Length: 79
Image (tube, rainbow, N blue to C red; front, side):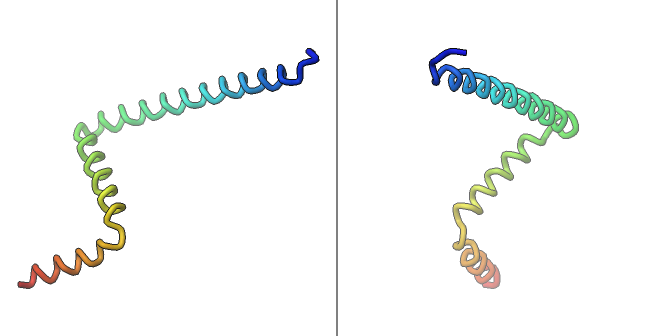
């Protein structure tokens, strides 16, 4: 072992970063397989997912205003 205290730290950081990289690659590969399977089962899944993500973004951005908008829409529908 070296007398340099930072050498062990550098070795540990390198090992940890390599381990994290391998985990990230494994996760990416699993996600790719999941997506490929979903597309095989339902070729239109990409459009459905995009629509859902868009709808969730709108819900998040509207937040509390949604209740007021829903009430206004219901009121205007009665007219």
